[in-house]
Amino acid sequence: MVDWVLAVIAAGGLAGVAALMFAENLFPPIPSEVILPLAGYAAARGDLPLAGVILAATLGAVAGASVWKAAGRRIPEAGLRSWVDRHGRWLALEVRDLDRAKAFFQRWGGLAVFLGRLAPGIRTLISLPAGILRMPWGRFLAWTTAGTFLWTLALTLAGAALASRHDQVAAWLDPVTEILLGLLLAAYLWRVFRRSRRRDAA
Image 1: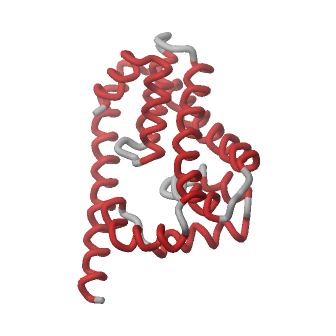
Image 2: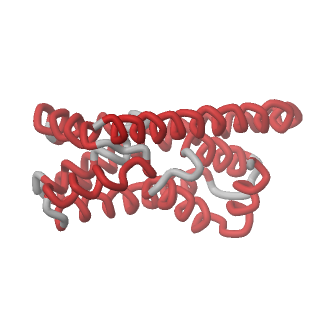
């Protein structure tokens, strides 16, 4: 997994970083907790400019979040809830997840978008209620970019710090990444299983 992400970054450069973050925000096949430290590590080795990595990752993530915002704005809430109720288990989503994100957004407004972009598991969902409740694009992009930038900066700099211990990185990063992905997969399968049991019991 580590080798694959590094290969995408090496082949695509800053565009590869942006593409990975865009995809991660649409449907997270690879979490940003893996992408960004590796991109920072590559930058610290001199393969990419550090500021460019942070900018490209931020732009890619904001673009992905904007797709969800646009979906929330265009799709009627009743239709979205119906779709999540029927198919959401494959994305580990439930209707109550939408309700929680909406309630959080209604309480905190723009601050909810900012904080949501800093919270794993909420980072994508928070864009939906922003669209459903017709948050102006200017405010949305400002809050989303601010939260995304801080998240990107922290994880990228953490990866860059590993460059001083390059001989130790591969020894522990691969198993750590595999454990992280394994935990994410287990959580996903559990949510799908629990969601299926609820439907069967209904």
